Image 1 (tube, one colour):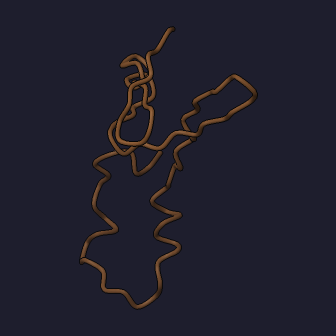
Image 2 (cartoon, rainbow, N blue to C red; image 1 turned 45 degrees about the horizontal axis):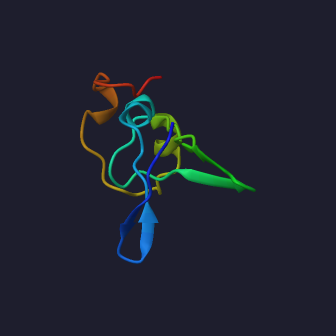
Length: 81
């Protein structure tokens, strides 16, 4: 895919194809990893961390206030994955 570099301030910029943005769930502010090797540049999307509710709760300090009945409430998303 041929891209044209454009001037923006003191830098040169190029656009990222919409298909790449959509395929990788990217948006404004997303970070990507650039790897340079000679005349080649590759763009990689870093793996996003996957959190489990049980792991996050285990890291909470003792003594924080808790909502009554919270532990008995059913999940509403992907908490149990």
